[in-house]
Image (cartoon, rainbow, N blue to C red; front, side):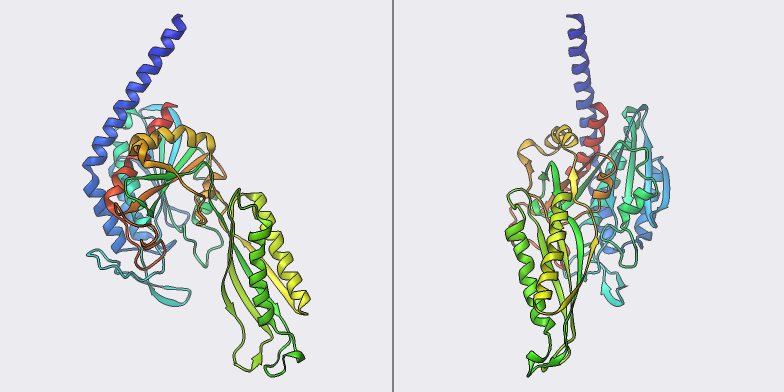
Length: 426
């Protein structure tokens, strides 16, 4: 009986301590809302491509040092790590934000519209935070300030990971998160959390999913080789254009006839076809490039195998040859079920139970998945669409008109901070 009473008292005291910390988080997060928005607008106006985020990284590093943290710069080229040691011993938790922008020319008419340009793949282009990474950096800087203000009450260590090159860099062999893992960023970390602002989810809401959440992304390069001929006498050659057309259509049968879409979706998209130079010449070859999206290793293996079979057999049936190159990109973003279950109350406490919902699998990809391959991780979507907006007409990510409602930033700061203190208490 005494043991039961002690247990009940302990649970009650723990709950009171947790509630007190959450109250402090709320107060501090609300007080720095304007600062977080200012940071985001500054980053938005001065975006930088992957592995070029030197200005962003300096602002981040200076801020973390001002909070009394141990700071490491130049991680995975331009990444920044801040370490906050709590007043009591305990596990180590990581919070991650990505810093890079995209080669997109902004069309929004904003006072903080992007002013940067760059050369990308040999072409001059505008640079824009067209995926919301400016928001992620500002929100994590806010969470760092909140948690640093109560470090004596933290029962563990927090690593703040500001990662470069989430979108990838054409001349780099590996991605930002993958390189960070290789450089040992997670060697002493027990769990990692991250968020992504989402323009099709209303501000003030949180979307999540246990298990596979975002797709693995792989690349497809195909060269179809035929025999060149005069366009007026196609029977004298082997037409790689007709063959490529059949291949494009044949690939879609993988999704409609081989993938069990009741479990998880999959996508095979051909994004470009190049072949020929003149209207009356059947060319010798056609080149195609595309993207593959799958969920889970087994589905990935199935889709890759069928892609090779479909392309090879269609080419052979036409008397052509096909060279197939499948390249592996990001793994599937898979939220650890146990960690997700534990942190559900954190999300519901931060946003309100009615504002937290389970999302469908997303066929977009995230290199946060490289972190999750090493340790338990949870990745969530933070609403960035204006209240009452229509997800079908709101400009999507990676477009010149991409726009974020900043009213949800404080929820992001609170949620990341809740994840830390609640993980320490579990």
